[in-house]
Length: 179
Image: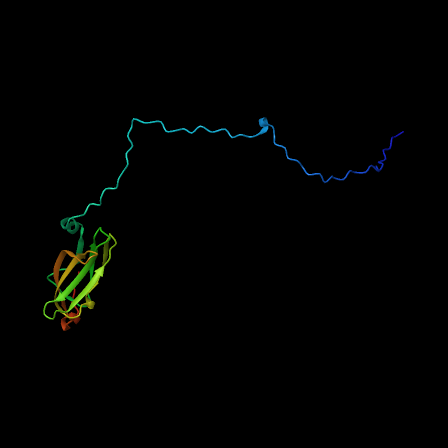
């Protein structure tokens, strides 16, 4: 024999909620949360003094120090008259990025002049000097100098260079000896 369980429906009525207001009663004192203060640690006094670093003023360099740091070189031979289509190597630089390097070349007889400025951003830089940009042939007095942001001129480096036109002799092939 096996027992069979059969569910039976109950007809017990479910009570409906009443419309009585809910009364909120305070919790007993033992249940009320009271935050306890956390002790704050104060720094213990130290016998070691603290050092507050103040920035030192930037040292101003003398003109002699700037001139020692200034590089202005044109690689050429003063004894040679260069053709106008010659390109020379130039190395310029200054370790102060606020300064501009200026190149000026003035032809002695005509006064024809070229001026060019170079920002090196605190580095030495190599470049070229294309003699074809010089306005006329002749002897040029050239100068490199530093220019400050307020326009002051410092540390002249001077030289001279001679430019000439191509002649018939430049077009004659030269014979090389047989080895």
